[in-house]
Every structure is written in structure tokens, then in C-alpha cells.
Image 1 (tube, rainbow, N blue to C red):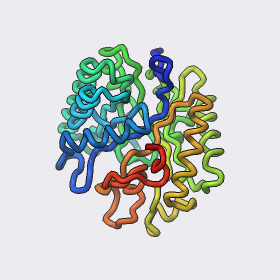
Image 2 (image 1 turned 120 degrees about the vertical axis):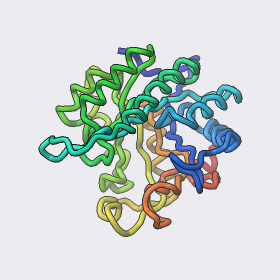
Image 3 (image 1 turned 90 degrees about the vertical axis):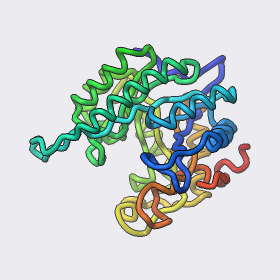
Length: 310
């Protein structure tokens, strides 16, 4: 197994954040941020965090890596390789449809991820192949065999540690062991807010969930690839039904500070979700929860959790 690096030059780099670079009017497959917008973002991020997580390797990923190098920023990167579903099947496992365009897109992601990891070796610390491809509720599930093939393909062409990201509700299942055997460390998501946990119990729940996943995979290191607390939610739909904790900037601040202290004390790498609000996500309603996970607003002004960290 290849170790996930959490220290550089005797400096703890496990204080981390997820980074989606898209601003208002931008989205994947549409308009992308400019180089100067990315530069502004990375300078902000470097004030607070030491590692970022990207979810894909196609543009603007290379621009992000270039700017980190140009600016000499003390930022490491977990580089994502996005794997889109290549087929759909019914509940009995019968094939419904195949998507050749997605096969080609996945191939390009893999090739680009491998190339960037080699070209920016001093910045990229690990590769994450696939995001929420196995958990039962995911809208972009892939067959296990397809994902494992991509993991093996990437791992054969890099000496960096390779993982895949999924929710704790997959990693706590016996069937996750086959996938865990293929990767170097477990990238686990644990969101107390989505699991009906109140703020006063959120840190306890997060610690317990982390410990359970580590116990389920004692031969693999576990990191938290996502956890966070949103600052707003809609009062309709699934989020209204599942989310019981109160959202807001004070609540986010309390959770962020508690998780950060625990992470640094116990040496648990945590990628807080996320750096900036992303208004392209979720439904049309302005209170839609997917738009409000950022520690910074979409206009790049800080929320209370980080306002006094600069």
C-alpha cells in the first residue's frame, strides 16, 4: 500500500477543503472560471487550508495546478478522476442502455489525471478515481467491476496513492471490502446534517462514524473526504425531510471549529465541504441546500466560520 501523505517538511497538511471553482453563471460543461478568478480563489484558500480536493481532471484542473505552481502556494492537491455511469440496468441487473460518449469521457479523465499527476508531482499527493459511484442513493452509480478496472488502470501508471470516494453508508457494508482491497486508503464521506443529526451531537456522530469505518477496514487508512454544515436549506423536498439540524452561519462555525480541532488533535485528515458556495447546484430555489455548503459565499466574502482566520 502507498501511504496518504499528511505531513510535508514536518508540517501537518491534513487541514483540507473541497474546491469547486464555478461561480455564478458558470457550471461544468458551460462557462468556466478565468485564470484570474482561479488565482483569487487559491490565494483565499491558502490563508486557511493546506490541501484541496478537486473532483475531476479535465479543465479547469490544469489551470488550478498551474496557478498553484506559479504563485508558489503551499497547497497540496488530491486530484479527482470523474467516472460517469457508462450504462444503466434495472433492479434485476438487466442492461437497459449504454452510453459510449461517457466511456470516451471517462477515458479522457483517466488519461488527463495520470498526465497531471506526473506533470505536477510536487503538488498532487493522491488520485481519487470516482465519486459516490457505489452507495445506494447515488444518481451516478457505476458497476463495481467497471470502477475497479479504472482504479487498476490508474494505479498501474502512477506511484501515488489511489483511492475512490464514497459515503460511509457504502464503506460500512461487507461488499465494500472488495473495493477497499484495490485502493491505498479509504476516502469516506460523513455528513451529520444529511443524516438527521442535531448540531450538539454532530461532532460525536462524526467521530463515531469515522471510528466505525476505520474498524471495518483496519488494513486501510481512513480519511474524511467530505464533511460539513450548510448555512441554508429549503423547507420542501428531501432536504426538508432528512435534515433536522438548524442551518446557519453560527451553526457552521461551531461545527467547523469542532471538527478542525478534533482533526488536528487526532491526526485525521479532513476535507471540509466546501470552500465556496456554488449557486449552480441543486434546484432553482435560492435556499436549496446544495448551494450553501461554502465557508465563503459565492461572491468570495467570508462566512463567520473563517472570517477571523485570515
